[in-house]
Image 1 (cartoon, rainbow, N blue to C red):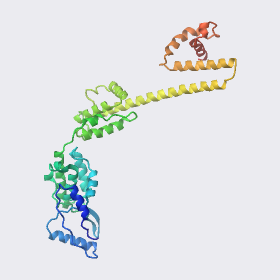
Image 2: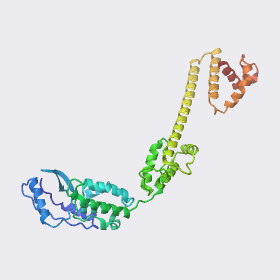
Image 3: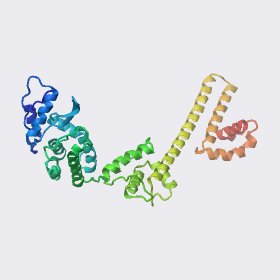
Image 4: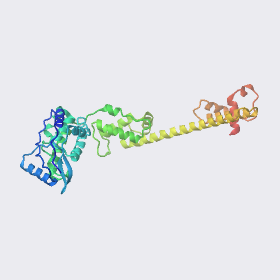
Length: 370
């Protein structure tokens, strides 16, 4: 394994242009390698140089590679583009220092940046003004991870420095409250209750400024109470009405688990009603299609055939009226059924007013067929 080369001149100019406000200690360039060196010889040379020279602020992160006696750590140059790419995956610490620290500590454990690289990443995410708030807690430039195992005792100084920086970030950048984003989270028409609650809970934890407890206790806390209010505010109107009617006491002391259980029951009830209505509509359409088919098959016939077709159509229409309780003629047909039954069950009435009326003739057919 050969030594590493000094970064190109255009890389230095790019980093100087982007991080002009951050002073980065320059690292000493390594000596020119010979024509051929083994990996063991190269590592021995670097170790001897590190023992004889004063501490040097490395601008390269530590990368784990395979060595002759097991995994070893070597340096790899980070350009300005590498810093931008690494910083894009981290959240904005100014919105919530807590969330940034959680991911930043994992980032340090995975990518092993040196003290200089940590300053460059924070300068990219914060800018000069906000960086000044935590500048006293940023690890010193020459600090770097020593052992490949993160939990090794040799890395204690590096871990303590990262944890101290995390505490400073939490104090300097508390979570910001943005209730507008919570209020704008509404349940979608076909969205399940559990999916809606999960989506709203994530937004609520990010923008409410309240920390989610480890477990829900016997008494509701501020996080649970405000979350329940947000769930009710964004719930579909038809589900909200059912939950308010069935969940007694939800306005006084609303519990999250009870609210989700009542909301799921309300959604199931609504789905069953919609399904029954859809089946009824399909049945009516099916009957209408059968009537049209019967009419089409008897077209061109005369005499009794047309009369039979008309009677079937009247019977089908009256049956649909009697099955549909919300039909405007349902009550009228029901009240007339008893008064016309004794006369219309016999052959057709000769009176003009009955002969011209649809309902008496239909009632007669209905009573005859039922």
